[in-house]
Length: 426
Image (cartoon, one colour):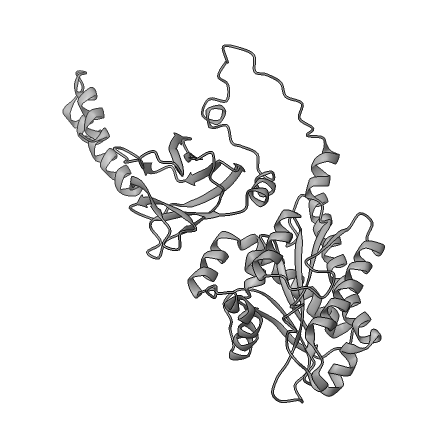
């Protein structure tokens, strides 16, 4: 029996005119049509086909208004499902298992809070996104090294659903007061833009692209990376620089991302050199993660991802990139802004020919859970540009341009914090 008829039955217990009951009935029907219920009939789970985790599915009748996912502990995933019309009557929950112990819902009035409890020995990182029909909501739980997951989870504070449901409720016993430093300076320190990960592309057995007179990309980008790191550490007080490689060694693409995530970086910068069969082609390019928009960007992406394929792993699919954009929109906005600042420095201060800011599915950027850009410093297949990039002067020009862009973004970002806005002024 629906809630509307239960209410009408209760009203009928009183000696009220029939026309009044009729008005109530019509009003209820009108309200139901104006605010249709979005049924959440089931929450299910299924093992990923690649064996790298689990997918939790919310079976909604219509797309939920919006959602938030956070992971305040390695074994706890919390979500907010926004929408005051969500109907969970008769919902079916997944059975308890070793990987997912329990799923709980909390009616918050404006939506539902969710706790997903993971197994004690499970190390899964959570991300959420709509499915292809845009109705169901999926939570991807992906195997992640525990140290990385533990560092990642420390950025979140657990939500206390009971306190939100009953903020004025009295407790039978006094809660234990834990020492929490919520001072302005402490919070300010946590929000500072002060850790940059510098990734010199290729290295070791992977020379990268081979340019004019057998110039190897790996050597040039390592020197540019070291110069960039020195500028950041020497000229920006408190700036911390982490290198994915500091010598001629080979690092797997996902290992580079792992280094960045463990360090809890604020920005990941991967530095490369370009190459083309036409030796007249020259100029800089700056990329951030996304779907490629041109054949030229696709060719660059294929070359930079080729090592990942040699490692016996699958390339990123279009679906992977779409899901990443849905889950990390704030990262992409920041990445695009920083890429634009770097491109501006190349054009206006370094005097380089700019080939623009572009998007492509670079695996090394995908692995870093933070804003990330990939810089193509020039074409070493072009004799003139090769001489510039192998010279100390040329490497200094490129490194200082990237440095100025990062410095300008840091100022922009921290000014936004003082004003209570983000870097876009929103």
